[in-house]
Length: 95
Image (cartoon, rainbow, N blue to C red):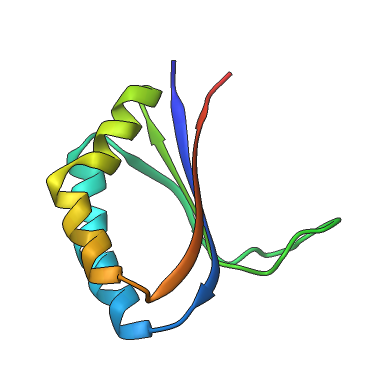
């Protein structure tokens, strides 16, 4: 079953750390089978929506998304990010 990796950037604390993370994370996640579906700031928010950077990545399964997160390449990206951002990251199964 398809799964979706959803990242919401609640706060960016260090643009340089975020850029270093992005340079490593993109190749790590696509190399692990992820396909970027959407990324950026919302064009419109409703209800309790917040104007924050969002990233949506599709994987073939929850297991593949977990493996991507736990991979050495992505862990290197996380180390580069460090405390550069406060994020809400979740993996959600598709329907």
